Length: 153
Image 1 (cartoon, rainbow, N blue to C red):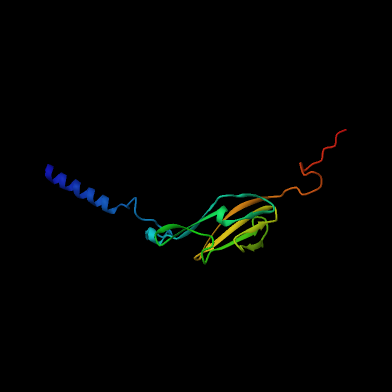
Image 2 (cartoon, helix red, strand yellow):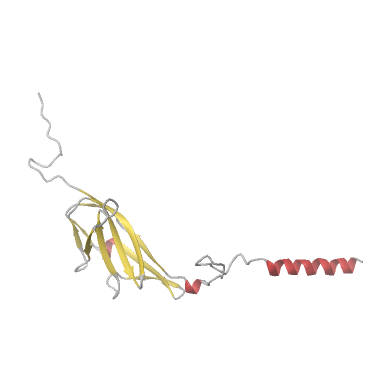
């Protein structure tokens, strides 16, 4: 009797293990339960080195941005000047319906307009973005030591 019970317990344990989903080894990308593997995973990931600028400063992707691309089962860093990489600044993208788009030329963009802007990067039919803030600087008269003039009575 003990032997029959032991065989039945082993059989039920094996059936339970075989019918459970494996906790590691499958990533379901599109949510339909087919368990597409990680080799099919493809995305673009931006790592900003800087998100706060003053007006009249330059956005230089070589120094200010790291572009990571996952494709063919590996994650690799791609330089900003790789063929197919498109970098654009969308001015005031959060507050207007049709933002002014400024494409990257000569590896740098001068930031002239204060506000929140999106940096948009496209590569291999994938697009990613992040937000930067450009703060205006005072360029009025005086010695430019303060925004407000103090009048002592």
